[in-house]
Image 1 (cartoon, rainbow, N blue to C red):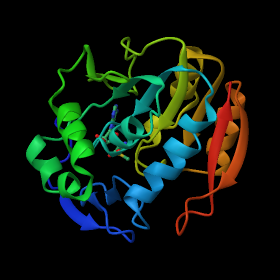
Image 2 (image 1 turned 90 degrees about the vertical axis):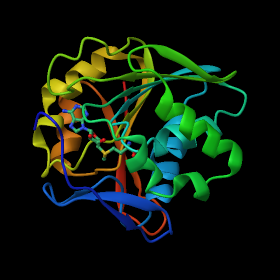
Image 3 (image 1 turned 45 degrees about the horizontal axis):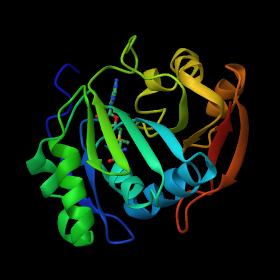
Length: 224
Ligand SMILES: C[S@@+](CC[C@H](N)C(=O)[O-])C[C@H]1O[C@@H](n2cnc3c(N)ncnc32)[C@H](O)[C@@H]1O
């Protein structure tokens, strides 16, 4: 999969926000029960909001459309957020524009989302006075040396384990665990028992939380 997936289909999810469907993988970028609702609840509310620090270092696995990133930027609330995001197959701006997020979001947020996509890869770019982003183009299943240390919040937003098992291994979780600060929070939309046990086996304390409104029954939050 050197170049990523060729065919991308835009679909509308149950909350009216769009996502991308990949026919080759038979997988969506977000929950079909609500893309924006899932991003806001799983990652921002159960992840970012759980961290009490004034300066927060986030690591996202799977930048994708930038939806998690822009919702996080909109929720910074006076805190300083350094957002690091790993992506092996970046979408083009045209593919992101086709999702309609620029018209769905308030004008200020739409400007932010465009800046996030236009930001240079591999460097930390200031997007607002409280939000900066470092987009890291690397393969999470490989060594991915550019991952930062002392990460406070991890958004683990890989494709589902049955679609991309190489992303959900003890080795990947172990590397993420090592990159986190003590008390750091890891969240993912997937609550499978196998994933929970792997997270526990690399050292996390794991809890199941209720899933997003109208979405999955449960999600996972793990603490280092
Ligand atoms: C579920 S989508 C992420 C959705 C994204 N967080 C958003 O807000 O739109 C999974 C992402 O992981 C990326 N990905 C797939 N394999 C990868 C790999 N080996 N290393 C890094 N990223 C990968 C995909 O290209 C895709 O963007």
